[in-house]
Image (cartoon, rainbow, N blue to C red; front, side, top):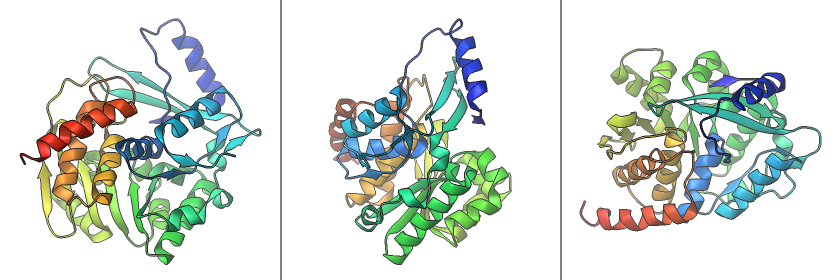
Amino acid sequence: MILVDEVRRKQLLDHLADHLVCSKRTSGGSTANAITATAQFGGKTFYTCKVGDDDNGRFYLHDLCTAGVDCQIDQRHNEGITGTCLVMITPDAERTLNTFLGVNTTLSEHDIVPQAITASDYVYFEAYMVMSPSSRAAAVRIREIAEQNGIKTAASLSDSGVVSDFRDDLREMFGKHMDLLFCNRAEALTWAQTNNLEIAIDSLKKFSRTFVITLGAEGALVYDGTQLHTIAPYRVQAVDTSGAGDMFAGAFLFAITQGKDFPTAGKFASFAAAAVVSDYGPRLSATKQQQILVQWKSIEQNL
């Protein structure tokens, strides 16, 4: 993931105008993708962000409402423009992200809705919030409110570059421990400053009560606080890996808040993530997710 400013964003858009094979506009954002997935499976969710009072902002909020995500209706702001991410996908299904954060860099403690936090089973935020001082302060306050009210904390490490560049700030933002941490192999290794996955696992056990390490085509590892479970992958032809980790997190959060144990939640999340990489874009439609849920219930009976 590469951060770009507004000038570079326009340069990229101008260049791509004559070189695109195909394109698709969709709402995104790591946490938003995960929360949308949870909502479209049937979970109750609330999301806080900032968007500009522009076409992209209206498109974004409409997507949240359509997905059933509760959010602040006054999130549009005249003083900035909506952040965007240009995702360029190569034939091997890998992607390059050029992210312009826009007005969302001004997300602050004033945008927090405490009653939404205290009504939750989990609060979930992303490591990307560490890059803006005001967003970082908001994340710290969200965590503090959750901890003071016995609400579990969950987060994604988001990007190995962010983990490497903001290590100390991340530890401050996350606090002494997390209840649930999501990461991929590269992020886990970077967090533990090692090339050995076993060492990274031991490091994560000391920091987070439970965690998930996604391993791409190799599946995932799920630690439930007592035992480490290996989650087998569901084999598909991947065309776009954008949002795979987010779908895994959203499906996993949905499953555990519905009373499923960690191994079952991991298998369901793996099944859902396989579906999202089979199509372009970081999200699936609500109809497609409900189809996945029906298919999964049939699979679950035979586990």
